[in-house]
Image 1 (tube, rainbow, N blue to C red):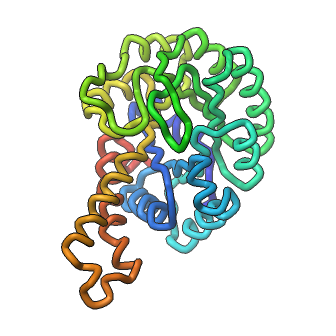
Image 2: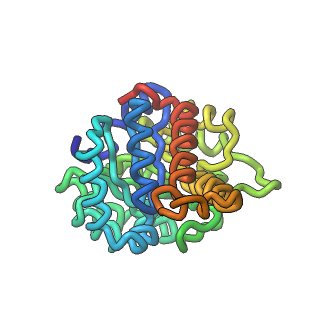
Image 3: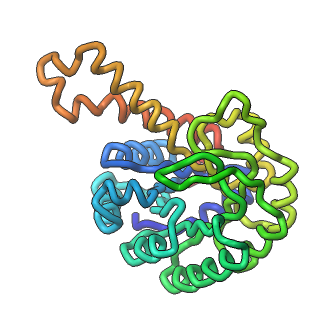
Amino acid sequence: MALVNTKDMLNKAREGQYAVGQFNINNLEWTKAILLTAQQNNSPVILGVSEGAAKYMCGFKTIVGMVNGMLEELKITVPVALHLDHGSYQGAIDAMEAGFSSIMFDGSHYSINENIEKTTEIIKMAEAKGISVEAEVGSIGGEEDGVVGAGEIADPQECKLIADLGVTMLAAGIGNIHGQYPENWQGLNFEALAAINNATGKMPLVLHGGTGIPEDMIKEAISLGVSKINVNTECQLVFAAATRKYIEEGKDLQAKGFDPRKLLAPGTKAIEDIVKEKMELFGSVNRA
């Protein structure tokens, strides 16, 4: 199965009132765990890669080679998109040239006019290659790989201006944040989401910062047009916890427990479990 863009999978999700999960990858174990879980659950999936993670994994071309190799070797048949997360203008161009099937150009920190100008240029380049494009209006709170947002609520009319350019999907700030949510978090702004949904028509909307949002909020967001939900922090947390437990129990000192294939196995299994849980919550199981 070759990489696909997100257009068909997200349009189907929007029509079917479910969401496709974007799970960020950070290494081989992450990627393998997510792909196998998607296959086992017959779910479409989006592999997200931040520019920081791309640099860590030796660049976009290395990642494309790894993912394409896994699709073949693991006999993956479900739809898989390889997506640049919060890409800069140059990062989006580089990811497209390397073979990513989907990119996000995050122009939310520019003025709306400059966001429109740069997004328009990116769309032209992407369309020529059959690559899907995600844009952002407002901003997502918190920090992810050096991308910092104050968490501004998106303006519905600005969302419409960006949606009308021909993007595949739109991320809009509605009170969501990257990382773990603080105890005093006010929750998602569904009034804003409903207004954005009304303004943008059938545009698949994207919910960043999917870690820690209560299930009822997730389901309400999906009912209001959210068709893609991003998860990263939660995978990192469960991977770290499982790895810590393995070491604290001294299993790395038993026989050849220090072998990285054994050392990283509990964390990898924890990622598989949380991805399965999210796919069930998002409603994407058996939707491939």
